View 1 (cartoon, rainbow, N blue to C red):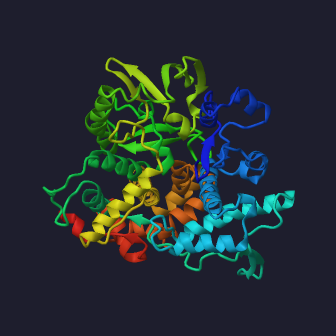
View 2: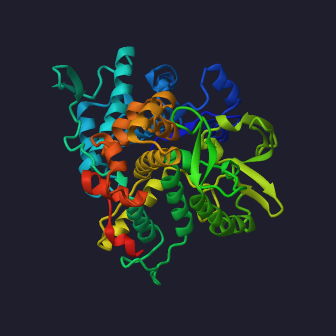
View 3: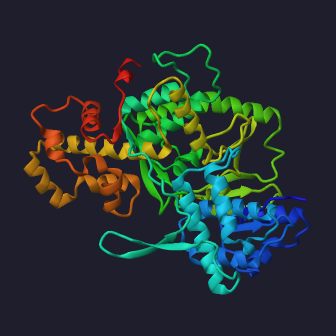
Length: 493
């Protein structure tokens, strides 16, 4: 008997939950899901007695949860699974949670001795938001007596009063550093991911087996500004083709894995080259070993793609021999890992990023890889660190500086002329907003580009002592604002 809750998803012609429950004795699961009104991509939590609570299914289908972004739904439902498992082991069902249960959970999550999965204040604050959403909805429906998430009132600037969870951590402040200069990034990448020493030279004792893959992924993020999920779920068929010599190449993010909607992205030639080298070396070797071991043929779920038309409609045959079709743009991260193609040597995943076993690497795993790289730098006495989102912030800052300089130099504009030009054609802030896939310029300007928000960009870019290149200019910004991580030692690398 299991002692933990299980998580599955309804989605595509073969849903994960349907596949699992069919093996447990279910009959006609797909038609039953349709009859119950389950939506595609809906999570299904199964308790240790193999039961699906219809109240939870209603919450996932009809509450405000269903209107959350895909990434938030994915995070929230994983938070529910962990809490429900904790309650189960304490002898209670999810609808029996008390204030004391949450206090115990808070202690374990933030400070539990022997808990390898301890989280920070910001992460637990998000968990509280997830719990509050579920239990307040359940209380309004009469499914629980009251929400175990106790609230308190706080007065905001301007006099407005808001309610926050009583257990909200006081130490929610995260690091002010959200940007790294290119030279600090390269130092972090080479030392943390590629096994270089603090002196900037390769270490003979390094035994990393995936350094080419990991460095290529980091380069892709830093060069393109893609989110972790967007880059981590790319298929080999979605990589831009390097046909003509250019500085940047365009690709497209599918709607189902983007945060809001599908969009184009741009990646530099060196970063795309690094990905190409990974494909023909580390990735090819992992695929070859998996084929030799017959690993792909034994997968319980595999969709062998037969064709894809110009509109992006895929046709494949699943592990049961059924023919299925769907738009590639609509396939989620959980469905993409099932896509395979058949070549001369056998089956091969369409997923770009693979583990050593040759199977698709789930995009969430990249956070741990970045954390281990930062920890290695710290052990060697190097004060450099990076996360997938820092790569995205840093891309935004570099693009703002680069586009501003290009615009001035290519058109020969003075600062006054550029302002007039921007009034007619739009400014570089809007261009960066589009590159990041933001809906609002406010997010781009206020959060991603904070280091230049309080500075006169015209003066910075057109001063008498103009920086000779973008890296020098970014180093100057780092020294001026204190918000950008730089490291002069990297110049020796």
